[in-house]
Amino acid sequence: MGWSVPPSLMPMAAWQAAQLGLTGNADPAWAIIDLVNCEFNQGRVRIRLPQGLSSDDSLAFMHAMQGFFLEDGIALYPVSPGRFLAHSSIFAGLPCVTTERACLQDMHALHDVAELSTQTPAQRLLRRLQNEMQMLFYTHALNADRAQTINSFWVSGCGELPTHTRTNVQLHMPLREAYLQHDTTAWAATWSTLAQQLLAPALQQGERVVLCGVDRCLTLQASATPWWQRLWQSLRSVHWVERLS
Image (tube, rainbow, N blue to C red; front, top):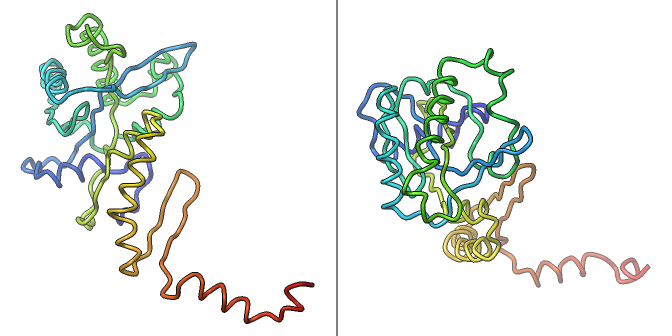
């Protein structure tokens, strides 16, 4: 992306809003709102994304939430099942933990009373909204047939979009979704598709491919010389006596 910002202020919401043409309002503050299942247990909260949520059900959840959000000056826009963009000045400079990180590791209790004194007005407002959504969804008809209920939302991606931002970036969400759902079969199948449709063509064109994880990365680059020629050259460059000694 070409951004020099801390991880807690990655402007993914503003970037996605720009990609979708949702930049009519002069206020640049955006957030990503993900529907989630929160399970509280002994001072920790486990976050899970909803499985099998249809577009129609996602819109129904958004419409149920919208009145509460509008009362606080927050406009919601649908992006994909279970994910919305939110627009309001309260998101300006709001540090966040990504949904991915929240799903992959249990978070410390978000409702810890000791933290209330240090919260900003924006954080207190969002916490109140989370509590209201938990009460709203607890007996909501939309959860009646769901094995894993939706009982809250997660906020992320609230950074301000830098002036100089790459516009040719593509996000491949199926890989993310399979990873967060711990679906190894779907994850492997998605990687296979990406390798055929994206990685292999890029390498064939001489481009460098960098695969990044949380704490490591791997750089791939095609060589103009076939592997068997490189092997033969390496064998010729060393005397067999040295090779066998």
